[in-house]
Length: 117
Image 1 (cartoon, rainbow, N blue to C red):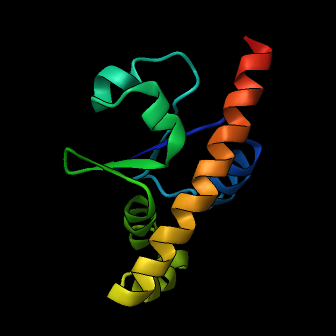
Image 2 (cartoon, rainbow, N blue to C red; image 1 turned 90 degrees about the vertical axis):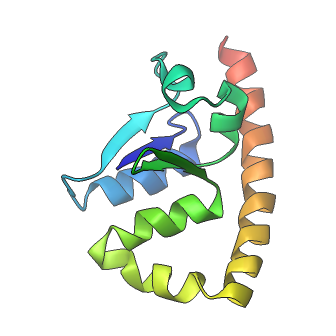
């Protein structure tokens, strides 16, 4: 499984660094801001990748709150989050909350990226 994350977002980086400490060999962490060919590999535009977390599982690219479910399902320590947040009503609330938070992080991060470019 590959996890595509925005390393230039301080909050995103902190969370991913926390997950990386679990040292799960089956998870490959891909920084979408490193200038690599992730847009070609994923078929997603860079602003789409910056906007949400994405995972690739079995050749399928999944984004947003659903990507977190896939990630947590594959991390034994966080599987309980998967079990709780996959429930339909709870997932709906999680998805809406994630989209709101991700939108504001995206806005903040794009301002930051414009300053350094």
